[in-house]
Length: 73
Image (cartoon, rainbow, N blue to C red):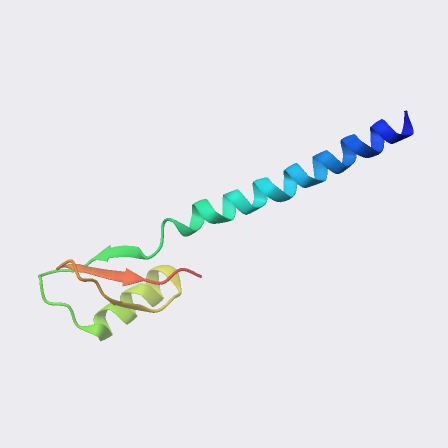
């Protein structure tokens, strides 16, 4: 009985660790965050300001016109 309880507990711990890793990977897929900007012209200072206000991170102009890419924390 004691060994089966120990085996079950070990399996539970391993499952929790693996699921936490999978959740962290899923969150990284949403990076970088895109923020729309007015007009098609992008200035790096605008992106830095918008990303800092909305997400508390740094940002840069996206390759796609009219968007800033904000880094993830």
